[in-house]
Image (tube, rainbow, N blue to C red; front, side, top):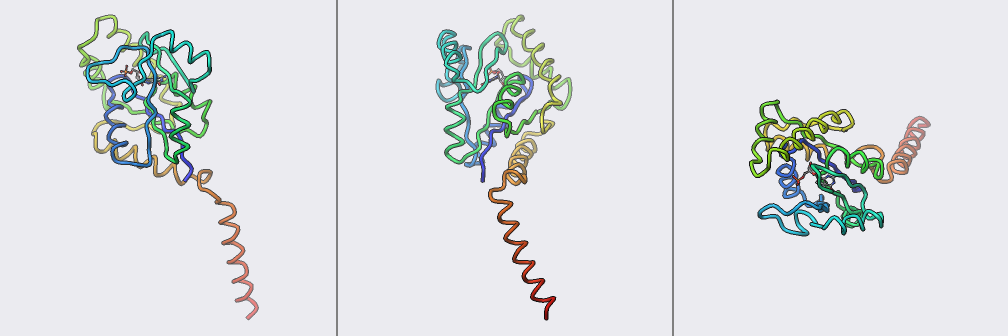
Length: 214
Ligand code: 5GP
């Protein structure tokens, strides 16, 4: 099996973190790439597990050293995917799943064209707005930033390979997992497909010859 990166995007509050955690808990063949960010940790978040929490100076230094496969400013904060995180997981033979915004997904896909892009769509405008409002920890301004970001994210849906309407958590988790299964057996990902097929063809041909000459 040839491991590949999987990107999950959704408007803020779209449930991608929950979906990703469930998929990761169910599948040992998928690892997670811990992103770096300059935003402050939320309650319960652990440095190195949820994010690598960096100062803006530390983040900029890593940008300068080209340590990010992609990075973007989201809601006024910097977020980025470390090449080292992605490489380490792929090297261990596991797919690597990431929760990144649309700008980052675009950059990442350019750097890793084999990646699979999945967009989680909220089932309705009402649900989307409720989820966005539900983050009551934020100021009015921060909230406006999120609404505008959600709008921008939705405009990028056509770039994604798959779109899953997240109306039911279990079904969404099943679908995302099924996408990974299907992508594993894409023609170009199957190891030695040409030589295996050639060997089968030549065996069949000699059998046909043997029978035809009887
Ligand atoms: P939050 O601050 O709520 O954890 O995440 C805010 C947004 O940042 C989400 O839309 C999430 O997808 C995005 N994000 C998280 N990690 C990364 C990353 O490594 N790169 C990019 N470009 N966006 C990220």
